[in-house]
Image 1 (cartoon, rainbow, N blue to C red):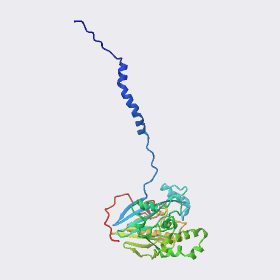
Image 2 (image 1 turned 135 degrees about the vertical axis):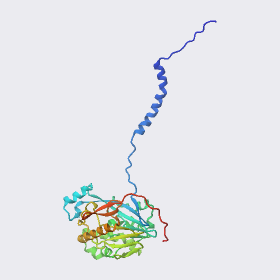
Image 3 (image 1 turned 90 degrees about the horizontal axis):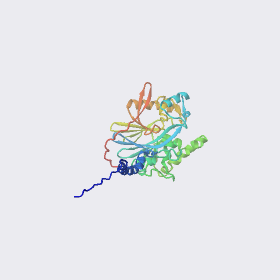
Image 4 (image 1 turned 90 degrees about the vertical axis):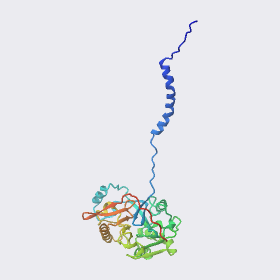
Length: 344
């Protein structure tokens, strides 16, 4: 038999490696843009969550509603040296330029029978940093037409301009608005308004315009201190900031919540120094006496507090600190199961 010669073809090593690595190189080229995209940081989400927060007081559901913030100059605080005020603000790391950021809050309380709003926010009366009550009320799952009663702590514009919509109509079309007789007698009196300093007359006008749709519809009424406004809701005189300034004590299942208006403008200063007033007080001496009395009552009774100008959500308690007081904010927590709504 003739010999058969077998030829064996040999690839150089580098050719073999190149052939083997070619698919990997192609895969790498495909994955590179993907890896680069994954390594890139996601876009920042420069938007805040809706401004509402819920708590429970017995069977009552309390929803804090954020209207926005307004800067208050430290110089508006009276009765304490400027350097001492600055020290108290710095202790809480509060910026003072262009002013101390001060919240404006309202509170929606569902009693199981009635939907009650305490204060209505500023709407457009104080510029673009305020006016979010309507949006946050809706975000919280309610509608303005469901509100039965609006209780006003007092008739300053940042608490009542939100009663009207942009067209001048009632923003809460089915609600009755209630305010202390003494406050209404001051802010809605034409002679008092006419004799007020020129720089104050705009505030009288805003108060009158805000309640006008309710007044015309026969849905503006007044109350006296100590009056039971609804089951579990009592008016409490806290005069001084305005002539008829009021707070509202809500009580359910032995639990109490005091909703106050402008008893405190600066939590950093006025809990530690209750004798500090603010330039807006109608009667500073009375405002100071009221603040001390309410602080002591709230601390001794262990009441929960909801404050219009306390840092949102404005819920917490008043604690004693030696001979003075401190603000103890509420912590985020779960809510008990809802009770079945009663017949309205």
